[in-house]
Amino acid sequence: MIKRIAVPSLARMLVVVGAATVASFGAGCDKGSSGPAPNPSTATPEAKPDAKGIDAATNDPTLVGLAKKALGCKWAAYGFDTKCPELKVTLESEAMRDGKGDATLVNFLDDPNEQVRWLGARALSQRGKAFRTDKQLAERIVTVAEGEKAKVVAQELGGVVGGIKHAETGLGERIKAMAKGHPVQQMRTGLLARMLFSNGETLYDFVKDIAVNDKDTMVRKAAISAFWTGTPPTRAADTCKMWLGFMDDPVDDVAGEAAYLCSFYPQNGGCKAEWDGVIDRVEKRAKEGTIKSTQMASAMSYLYRQSGASDAQKKRALATARLIAENTANHGMARGRALELLAEKDPDAKKVLEKFKDDPDAFVKARAKNLAERPVPKEADKAPAGTNKPAAAPGKVATEPTK
Image (cartoon, rainbow, N blue to C red; front, side, top):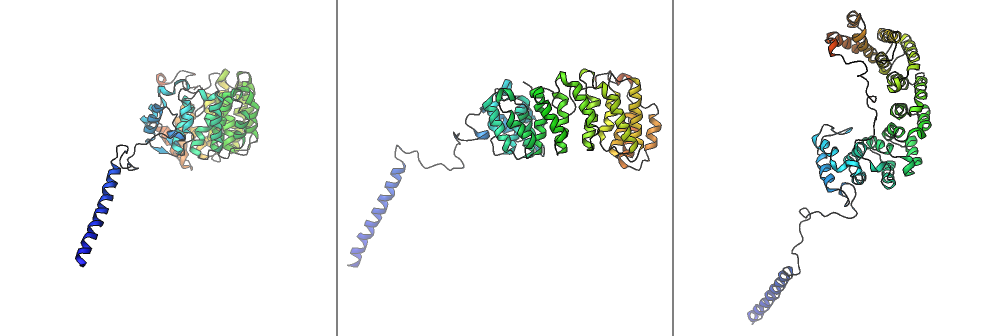
C-alpha cells in the first residue's frame, strides 16, 4: 500500500522538474533570443556618447590609434621620452596638419589619465592651430587648465593656454588671472613663456609687472625670459634697458638671467647700448665674490661672441671671466663656467688652466683638468662669426607651432 502511493508521487515530481527544465532550455533557444549574455571581460566595447578623453565618441580614430601606441612610451617626471618612435610618429601625423586634430586633442585634456592629458597638451603645443582663435575650443582648454593639478601636465598645458589669442577669443582676463595666481607654478611659467609672443604689445606691461613684483623666483625668471621672443620690434630698446635694470635685483637667479639675456639677445644687433653696463655689473660682483649664478659667467662668454662687440668690450669680457674664476668666493659652478671662455680665448689659457688644477673647489679643479685635456679646435673647424647665434635662447619658445 505504501509502495503504490510513493512511486507515482515520485514520478509526478520528476515529470514536473523535467518539464520545467525543458521549458527553461526552450526559452533560452527561442528564435528571438541572442543566447546567454557574454562575459563582460570578453564583450566588444562600444563607444559611449558621454565618454570623455581618449574614449570620446567624436575623436578622430586615426589620432586615437596613434595616441594609444604612444602611451606605451617610457614615462618620466617630465612626460614621455621625446625620443620614443611612437611619440614622434604621433606628433608628426598628417591628421594634425592645420589644426585638423585640435578637437580630438582638446578632448584628450578631459581624460582622467595624466599621461593622456600630457600627450594632448604636447600635441596642441607643437601642432595645434585652430584652438588659438576658436573660442569654443579655447574656452574648453582654459576651463581644464584652471583646474589642472598635475605639474607634469601643467608645464605643457600652460604653453597651450599661452598660445591662445586674447582678442579673438575674449578669454584674456581669465588667462591673465591664471598667469598671476594659478596654484601650480608650472602652469604659470609655461603660460608666461608664450603669452607675450602670441599676443604682442598688449601684454607687454602685464608681463613686466609679474617680472618685477611676483614673489615666485621661477615665475619672475619666466616672465623676464618671455621678452626674448615676445618683444615687439618697437620695444626692443625698452626690453634691453629693463634687462640691464634686473641685473641689480637682489635675487641672484633673476640678476643672472637678466645678464644672460642682455648679453645674448640677437635681434637688431643685440643690446649694444647696455653691453658696457653688463660688464660693469658682472665685474663688480666678481671682485666682491658675490657671483652665485652661472649665467653671470655665461653672459661674458656670449657677449664676447657678439659680432657687434668692440675689441675693448671683448677684452673686458675676457678679463671679467678671469676675475670670476680667480676669486674663490664666487660660486664654484660659476667659476667653472668662466674657465670655458678662458680655455678658448685667453692667450695664456694653458698657464691659466694649469693653475686651477689644484683649486680647493672640486668642480673647478675637475673642470680645469677636463678643459686642459680637450683638443684645441683648428681654425678650419671653428664656426664662422655669427653662426653660433640661435633664433631663440635655449629652452625658449621661438616660433608658432609647426603646421
